[in-house]
Image 1 (tube, rainbow, N blue to C red):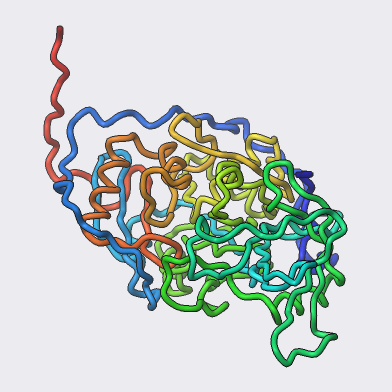
Image 2 (cartoon, rainbow, N blue to C red):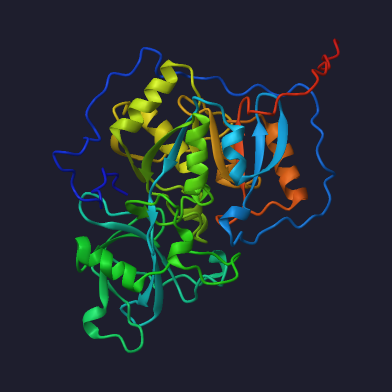
Length: 418
């Protein structure tokens, strides 16, 4: 699959707007490679491993979202609410958020044979105007992705007719032509639509619906998968760590003395049901880091202040940019995968959803917390009924959270000498 710089869906900047990619000179302290977090040398108290079915539903009210705060320095777990985020962070922290709006990226239609087919966009269009997408056979989100039948095998030049709802006028139909097929899987393709720009976006919003999965129990409205600060329509799944963060919470962060900055990262698909394709996830994803955000990150690093990423997409954008030398900000593409063996260069902490062992997001958290603490946090969340998935609860992993210091310094056990 060709990796290309994105063609932004936002209007081109005017002369009065700040440029997003003017080079800035990074401080001498960058990049700041950090060693992996040390292992905690004493056993952590964790709940019994009882057969508890932990939550898989949805927090209908964003104000009800819970927050499991994990202090990676002191090894403490704190049960809080998302609204408590400001009091857990420190004055001077820099919080970076993903402002990508979520596209209605699921479109139903007909293959050339007339067989039903679903297209799930895998990201925004590249510089040639082609959209990456994954094809699904008959069925919809009520079925597990791994149970969906494979779609009709298509080849370059084949056309898919979308938006054939009963009663719809022929002029309302949208057509997508297969431009290329990935060697990873015949289900991963690039599409050329029969229109572009504002006309294409209007058609996507007319015919599409949010991507969702069978763990949910009702149709999702498009507004329900947007953050309060959503901007450019780049994401095909919601950057969900930012969903509970209301303007009241953001204002509380500012009052606390926490600096806020934004970037845009095209959050991609989390599952396809195709073993070969799922093994390749996450696919290369586009990002755009404003000059002001790059400058804020440089300044925080030079001053020894923490950078807290809201969402794994922000982690991947910032760390991907660091590894590619894009210290000036601007647009790029990353296929970065992080785990316990990764050296984190930019980000000190992360706000994310509740993830279980075996998930790619859980492996990424291994770059921020030692295995014993990560396992303790998972078992604690499981026993306390924290909700998983994109409409669930949150976790905060960061060193030295406010209020997380041990009340009494307990002696640490020493290892027995042979």
